[in-house]
Image 1 (cartoon, each protein chain N blue to C red):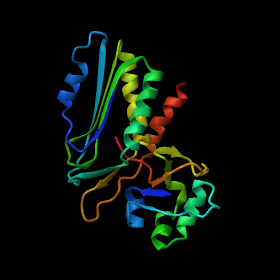
Image 2 (image 1 turned 30 degrees about the vertical axis):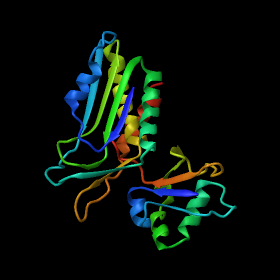
Image 3 (image 1 turned 135 degrees about the horizontal axis):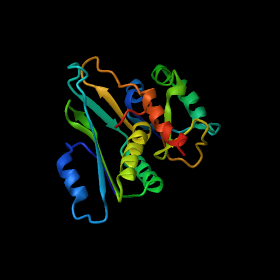
Length: 83
Length: 149
């Protein structure tokens, strides 16, 4: 799975993205956030308050309970501040 | 419809002229220009990060929704990324319609939705530059369009 990070999520994890093999038992975006949070301090820091993290599946906004199945790219970022 | 995400400066005069040029079918063109503020002289520049691909897609979805909800003939959105100094344009929105009501409403709708849905993030320049926090006011501004239905 391709994961991409933006803004302070990217800064805290220390990279703009990565390719990771995910365990089969990860069903939803929330499952993935929980799994990532245990990969190291940088991930734990980035996902410390999961409720503020926004996600997109294949470049479309998706809620945390969205299924990962079928997605090729998952993005994590803070609330947007464009415009 | 024209949606662009670019690092180059936005020439508001040229964009406005181009948007209106040759039109005989519209009676109203509304343009909105979003500028970088200096926050009372404190800010030297903003760095705007975006999600390439999704930024264009999401703006296009917002513009499509505006065209479904309001009688607008055409829409242009240009949004910048990269380093932007106070006084420079961050975003330009133009809407065209037969009558002014739809053009005003569509421009307001698009700005409110862009603020909360388009994947851009602002960071203040400087050693201790902070990411700009999302504002509840922007969420409220976007929410009013669903209440008005």
